[in-house]
Length: 589
Image 1 (tube, rainbow, N blue to C red):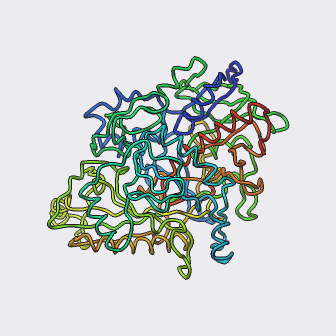
Image 2: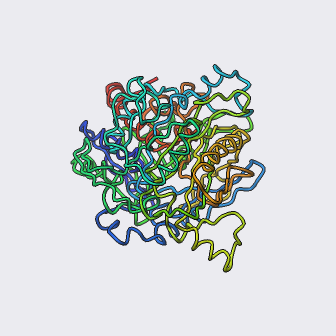
Image 3: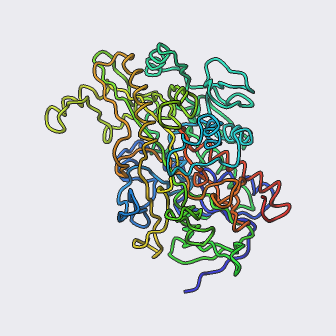
C-alpha cells in the first residue's frame, strides 16, 4: 500500500528529545510551520511520574519502561570487523530513550561543559606533544567550532535547564569554590550549587589533603524553585534517590518535559506526533535535496510528510541509521578509511573505587547521581602527559548519596566476599548503607576500527537493517582508566574506609553491564567534508536542507557527560538556521 502523502510543511524535526524540542521551539517562534515526530509515546509527568509509582525500580530499571523497545528495533554489536555481530536483547551498557523527551527524561542531570581542549583535541595535542602522541589509527579531530564560539549557547542551555553550580572561571578570572580548569564563562550559573553533603565533605577533605581543588558538580536538578526563560516553573529537588532511569515526581529534574515542551505545545504552528517512527528521508532525483520523510504511525501505516527543511535530532544510533538508510552522505569504510557516515563512533571510559566502612553510615536513598563533589585535575589536558603514553583524561567524583540505593540492582560487597549463599547475604546486609563509590568518568578517542554501519543480516520489525556497532577499548583509554582510577584510589585511602576495591577498564568492551548512556559520533561535524558528515553548523555537506543535531556530531568524546554540549549545539544550530539558512537557503559553508 502506498504511503499517505500529507500537505507540505516548513520544517519536520525527527526526534523530540533534548535537541529536538529546543530546535522546534526556536523555529516555531519564527512563524514557521513545524512538525515534530517522535517514535515513542507521550508522557504526562503529573500522571506517569506520580508518587510512589515513580520509584518502581522493577518497572524503570529492569523492564526499561522509558527506553527503546528492543523487540521492535535494537542494535547489533561486535568488538572487531572479523567477528559476527549479534543483536542486543536486553538493555545493558546504555539506555536510549523511547518516549517524548527521549533519553533526557531518564538522565541523571549531571551538567558539565566540555573543556576548550575537547573541541580542539587533535591540534592542541600535536602542538604540545607532537604528532607521535596521537595513538595509532586514532581518527579524532577538531570539531570545526571552538569553545569560545559555543560558550553563549552553553549559557543559553544552562539557563533553560536551570543548572545549579558554582562558576570557576568568570570571563578569564578564576573564582574560589568553582572548577578552576573550566573554560571562561560569561556569567554565573542560574542557580546555586547543591548544599555540601556528608559524602561530599569526606571526598573533599581527602582530595584537598592531596592538593586538589574539589568543587560542587553542576546539576540540572533544581537547587531551588526556578522559572526558566520560557516562563516554565521547576520545583526544588527533594533528593528522593530514584533519579537516573526514572522520571521526577517533583518536577525538579530538568528535561524536555519540564523545560521546553509545555511552552512549545502552545504554538499554533507546531504539531507534535508521537508514535511516529521515521524510516527514511526521501531525496530528489539528484540526491541533493530532501523532499520529505516517511514514517510509520501507531497503526502501522506509512505516511509521507513533505517539508522544506528536515532536521534529524534523534539519538546517536538513530541519526546515523536514518542517514545510511536514506543515502545522505557517503558511508564509512574502515578498510580504506574513506567515507563519513558511521565514522568516529565513540563512547566513554570509566573506572571506580568502592569504599566500605565499619564506622560510617550513609543514606543511599537520598540525592541522585547529578549532585556530587568532583575534581578536574586529571581531565583533558589539565595535567602534563609527558611520558604517560596516552592523551586525554577523566574527572573524579562522588555522588551525594554515594551511589544509587536501588536494592534490586545495587548491593556492593567488599573484595573476597562469597558470590552467593549466607556469606554473601551477610555482607550485603552489613555494607549496604556503609559503602560509597568514587567514580571515574573519562574521555574516549575515536579510532579507525570503531564505527557504525548497517547490519547485513538482522532487521527491525519493518524489515529494515539494524544499525551495527563495532567497538572496543584501545590502549589509550585503558591507560587513562588505569592512571586516573589509581589517583582516585589515593583519594579513597584518605577517606578512612576499612576495605576498598579498585576497578578500571581492562580487556574487551562488553555491551552487557550498564556503563553510560553516552554514545556519540557517526555523523560528526567538522571543517573538512572528507572527514565529517556535517559542517560546523550541523548542516549536511551533501544535502543542504538536512541538519543533523545531537551526540552523533561529536568527533570524539570528552570526560564529562554529553547532554549540555548537545543542548548547546541545538541552540547554536537553531540560531544558524534562523540567522543564516532561512535568509538564503543553501550551503552555509
